[in-house]
Length: 170
Image (cartoon, rainbow, N blue to C red; front, side, top):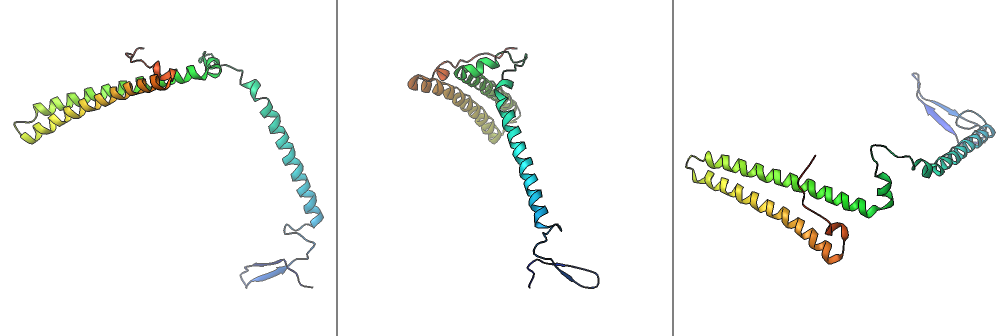
């Protein structure tokens, strides 16, 4: 009878080949013991899956807990359109504020470069181009805002129609 389970391991005096009887598993126990172990593992995994479904069923209950720092969290869930409208308004305001600050930075740096030209025509042209690029950038920023409003009016998207330019406040 030939054994199929051969295992070779290295030894300081040479390689040793071991063979196992077909009824003995790789872990050293019999197939019956291995089958019992697999059955126990199956039961544990089944129990954990059932336990996880139990906790998933409780998730709607835990969703009712509210944070006192976020008083309007329930309203956002109940009315997602209002949430999207506020979200778009906030993102638009952030981009406008950052764009205007970037424009003012470009203008101030261009004015500094005008003062530092020392009569050099190349530096003069570079400073003039900086002012032109800043003006084009702020024009693009406001035209994107106007384009969003037009898209909101044409397609009837209320959250885009409600966009407003507002000054930052605390």
